[in-house]
Length: 389
Image (tube, rainbow, N blue to C red; front, top):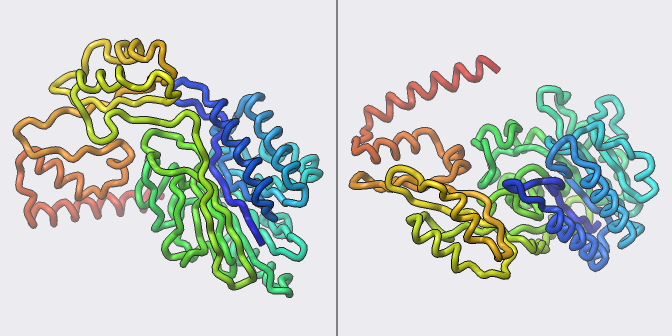
């Protein structure tokens, strides 16, 4: 069975007030081309189809048109689209019945008593267990395993078994996500991979934007990542995953197919921060015909330059690039050099490391006794947090 695995399209996303319809449409057109060229048996779209639960009419039309073109590129292919935490579960399935005429299965809500609603058999090819995003607290215990066991009973030919999920799995790399820690990413609490059951050949995951295998999955559990960057910190390649599985029990073969973004997200300077005058010069010298989004990393002495945003915007007049935002960092004087962290990196850093960096910055020796005291306080805070839950 050959599967195109994609997720986190975030259609309708606006970047610092800039409409991204052109690049989103380019991404969808590339999806159609890939389907036409690769002819997969299944197209998996694993959640966060839209960026908000109330997408505009234009954005919904963009999706409908894309699904029709994707279907026409390979009419025999089954399209499975599940809801993510950004999607509205009820809106996701409004056109569920008409879409079935295009071989599209839209799965928006969990059917606790109707397991067959989540099992899609691809005759002679395999089985898809499609599960949308669901709050873990409302998830019946052992639900994933129940579905896998039910498929095992039906899978008498030893065909490949693929399951989808839109969640945070412990052990994944959550670089670039806002409000991210080892315990939760994007508002979704992390779960152990074992909680998703056993018996699948490939676990198609959505939610984490950085494409990766989850280490404990032994190359069976994978986030395909988002095909377009959602923030400037997503400075890695973006793609879809083409997955091939020979039979039940076989290790999947995964090939990444890159997605070209006609409006890349660019940070100046490329690494670190620079003084305002240096940064302005980089922006002034930026190619006139490069249609990029621009973020400026500026190092300041005390206060940010007055009218800095207006100056930056003026420097892009006549250029195809679009100025988005200024990211300021205060210059470290004679104190220990401060480690430069983005908001996302700061949230992902362990508390003890943040404390040590602050102590070094203030010229304080963070000795063993201070470490023990910090760990004691941190344990008390974490225990209180668990008790509140």
